[in-house]
Image (cartoon, rainbow, N blue to C red):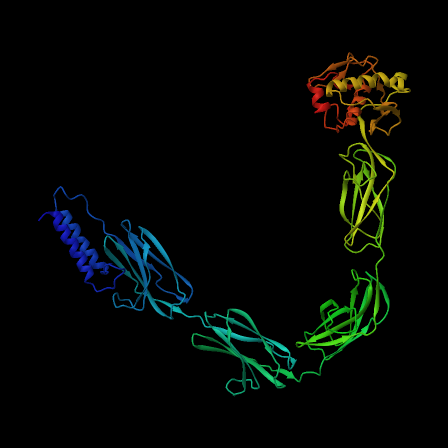
Length: 640
């Protein structure tokens, strides 16, 4: 016989020996588990056979797997707790698995093993499995298992047990611990429970005795579902004989009852007389819709939890369908009561006030037979008041003002500016849905970004689903201003040619500005532009109002460079940035360039806004002119 044949026979022998150990199968078709000692002995024989063979067919000895469960070897656990099972394994072949169980004794193969897993993946080294003990009966247990590798099982059985015990349910009735209640009142019975198994129930009763088993228990429920934590049950005391009673009950779980019995009694007394409810007012009067009117009543014998409902009615008869309900859940108390009726939205007419006290499922009605009158509320008014005149520079804050009256709650005001006095869709809204109030009101309008021009302020009050409009017929003007950029320059006496005294000084400058703009912008219309001399506020060189350009007389005190040859830029040197800077000690040096200023304002006439740099910058430095021809720099800053 060859060595290979002998090895096969030996392996079959080992497997047969393992199968004859009489241990339970680990899975369908799995082998029984031999003791660790027998397996080690058989593996030794196996290796000796391999070592004895000198044939070329023997490649290497097969390593013997090991498996030892290391914990838990002691401890006491509550059912439901997670217990980590740990082991060490070595020389584990691929595809090996681990099976784990808990056992009532330390002996294999007597059928009292309970298997937790039979397919845990096995690896060499330390391993662990979390055993969820939910549902495990109280008792003492030994942890065991085996490593299943190469058709063989390597077993490990701990000989020191652990203890699993079931948690004990608890149940305590907590309230009411005392108190007096009227027969027919609902009493909330409350309790706390813990360690409640699934499917548990709670039974509740009331008794004239403070101990169990006296035969005086009156059961309210036997099947209330039980859960962990606080619970409650609403006891309807209708029909309960007046007297002193103790509340009691039990938690029923796993065939066992956990009892709780109140130590102090509660009192159930005879239900009071029939509740009474009488409306007192209003029985007369005339009110304006929106006015608040007080409804008053008297009530007696009012049970806890009773409510009052109130309505106004077009006739003094109940049930005709003409009632309009004001409230249906006003808390009811014994004695005098009142409710403030807000008549906003009530149609004009004659009305009777009515209502009822609702207690223990029954209404106690009251209907006044004298009427009150509700008149229509006066119409809301709204009027824009200002401003109706004034010139403002773009960026300034303007305060639109208005007055309103008879303003219902929830009304709003919206305000706009308009180039004309007609509502035709060209309005630009400043504020929409501002909360409206009675009397005078205003808002702050920041005109930054507003196109210079003439505008009329307008708006409307939105109240009660309708708009009350107002449109001013006198305008204000929003002007585009050019300021001087000369924060560090000192003012000096001005010569005659640096101050504008007549329109003849402006004419050639205006003509050249129009020519340059036409060349740059493709002939946009500047034919009707009016350029005038004015005394403007400090720091302002010029401003535009519509198609009128106002130029400050003395360039904000710094003096103008009024170019006698505006067709050329001979007094300036060009910089790489595109701007022209006055030659030192020339007539333009240290002065504001009138040509650039007029061109800037004409840009506003054409609809261009201020930008951060260039011809349309909002500030002009002294001694600076922007390019005179339609080149790229001019197009970028003047038109683009």
